[in-house]
Image (cartoon, protein in one colour):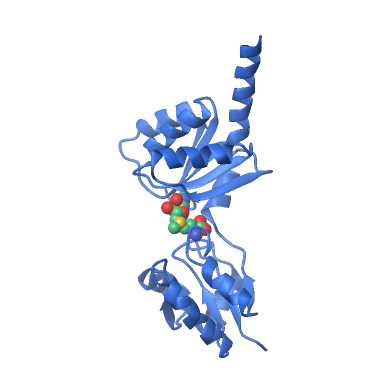
Length: 240
Ligand code: SAM
């Protein structure tokens, strides 16, 4: 039977959030490609899994992809994991998957934890259509452009942000969408201090500013449909 590339999601905080299948694949594969070996060793030790590890992160992936592909073509099963969550989602993975497909290698993607989808569902914002933007561009002008383009779809927008920049980014969102648009900051998902900061953008900014310190990992969600409703209301008033 030909060897495969397995894409294996790992927990985003709570170690119970790993599937039985993920554990079996990690136990059975020939080697594991992972971002930071120190982070992955902790997870693998926890589940008593011992495997050869190959470091695979954004700055060495170009070099590593052909090495990993060669190993698979020579009969090894490879598993790709990232530090947390779903590989290839704001993490390395895409280049390896593309290369595997191009070489006719079977790619098996295991479903599992990802901060974006977990945040979306807990946000209370519409889930019927959403656009995931990963990490936005850091410069305000470029960030505004990305947000405005995403807003035009009228779906729920999801992006990742750091606690250091969250207030500035939320203020920029207020400029783009208006203060009455619904927003959610989903923080430390699946961890001890999990928190959903919900409300309109104005109130989320207030809640963030009222904190002594903003810590942890976070995903941001905006209901662009509610911002379009705001726009329509404004236009109606203008046209009266
Ligand atoms: N591959 C991961 C996934 O599937 O969600 C995302 C990796 S990306 C490098 C890391 C970012 O995801 C963090 O900076 C944060 O924005 C978001 N994130 C990861 N874990 C999170 C958590 N437990 N709660 C909220 N956001 C999280």
